[in-house]
Image (cartoon, rainbow, N blue to C red; front, side, top):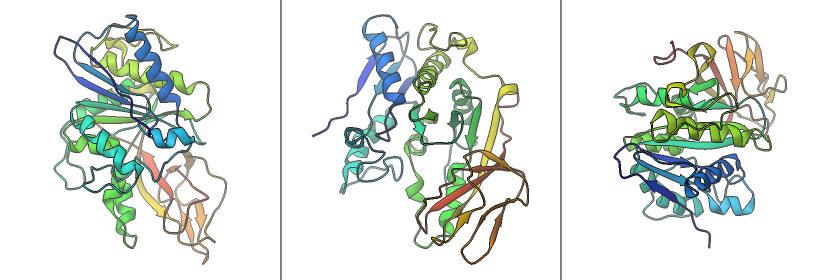
Length: 322
């Protein structure tokens, strides 16, 4: 029977409560290595926690991790809500992790991807009272996103996913709730860091830089020098706004038929011009880019009725304009 290892450090000085997750998807191990390296540094006294609480979970999904697969029974980063009657491994894992998220202020969730682009950061909505994802900590979350290290910062996923669900028979917006969405629901703020491709030897360093960036931003530790471009100090935790590529995901297209096909082999964040063909339906309908922007998360192996690709555009958000 697998267990979830949780390592926690508590300072006697009050401060923020930061949670870092690795291997929410079992085959995404760059975060696992980075978290264990940080934990070892605290265990040996090389690092000191100056204030607050730091909680480290190197393997959030031990079932999938033991198999070397992305998922155990299903995607842990979807429908992330406690269950009264858990039906699968991920339900049982969620029941353990959800109270942990709810007891913290900030979450850094470390991931990697199969193919595509450079590292990037996901963050959430602006402050709002809408029913989809009400929020009140956008300024803090924007600062956390900038402190992670990658220059590419992405937002708008849940509204775009919800648009697709509304067009889909029997779709559920709740299925789009992952760790970060649940964290915001509980009153915290959160980012997901996609640290690079699964096997990229640089991905663990990106994950380590993200952890150090969060600790520096929240002034929880002394400066450290894990960033190859310099130490992640509190004064230097954020990427310069001029260097950022801010991207807003705006819509999703489902695959309708197995005969649907892409016009070319798109990679995530490939640029596209307004009116450029992206894909063609089996009945001949051509799907055109609605505006200048990006093709995001194209999946040529998507099953009919599931997300096929997203479209995005250059973003504009407060906290990223210098």
